[in-house]
Length: 113
Ligand code: AMP
Ligand code: ZN
Image 1 (cartoon, helix red, strand yellow):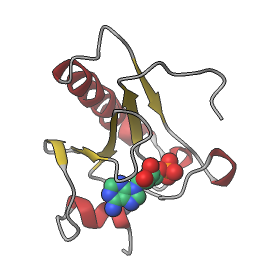
Image 2: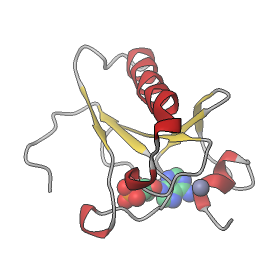
Image 3: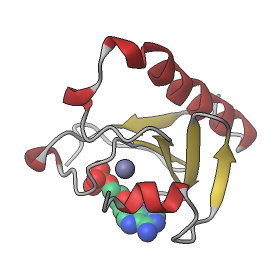
């Protein structure tokens, strides 16, 4: 499959790895939108949130647990952080392998752009 994030997981494309376990992979966003901008992805290829099935219940929890761990490790858990998951073109999704954006280190505004 010609998926950029699958290739990053396979380490065929380099990335700044932040966290890795059996099911989850996290790395620095190449074009950070905040002082901390990390992408948290399942090792299983899932194109969009619309493709998440019941079978993925535990995996989706794993993504959030990894995000929490990273936020704590980076010292921003108490200050606050934002998790963003875009789905399909109008949201701004450009890579069709689901990813949680973990954004932190500055005040976030609402509504998002
Ligand atoms: P989205 O627009 O929600 O699909 O987010 C895709 C994100 O992937 C963007 O924030 C990009 O900056 C990021 N990105 C694209 N290519 C790479 C790469 N090779 N390494 C790290 N992050 C990337
Ligand atoms: Zn993929």
